[in-house]
Length: 264
Image 1 (cartoon, rainbow, N blue to C red):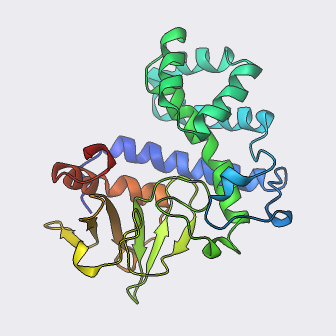
Image 2 (image 1 turned 90 degrees about the vertical axis):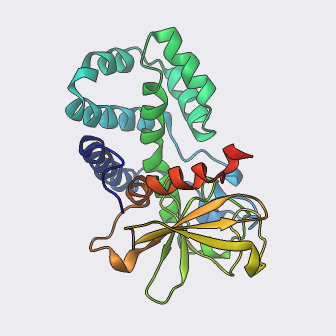
């Protein structure tokens, strides 16, 4: 992988956020009950969309926001004043709205929020999303025992995030890996994860010079792609979010070649 695509400072920030999210997930485990064990599911729809109760209690979500904010302030001192102003002015109504809009990844809402509060355009959504992920990850952990029974086209069977990353093990088996909720799911058959086309001649691979760890799987039918990482060649066990960041050069290459949803 090419470590020069993103700065060392940003990688360090992401590592610190991921560590904090793991701590928060462990903390939340005794307080949040998503009810997944008592609920019946349609295996063709992501779990999150079918939940009868919210797995994100507003009071605990606020705590998560504060914890992620502390990491940001530590690694980005120039943001301290802005972050402090943002946190202190968050109302209960804002918290409930943030949960809803971050779940649906509503960038427009957060851009408007930033403009009205005179904040950096990227900051509210980044903070809201990173604070949401421990809850998503806890849900994924609670679904681990049955998630491989799902067959959801194009998205993570747990949180509904579009597929973009997979791990390849020593046996060559592919495991889809979600950067948002950290769900791991074995791919049942050789086919495009986005459209389901299983004709071998319609799937091909782009290899990157000087990168013997990762490559790009491309589908000629839907014009989309999937990043593949051979984890057996990596010395440490990494979170999906970190692998996603470290393979961002594959996104650049794929999009330059005309692949991806935004290129349609």
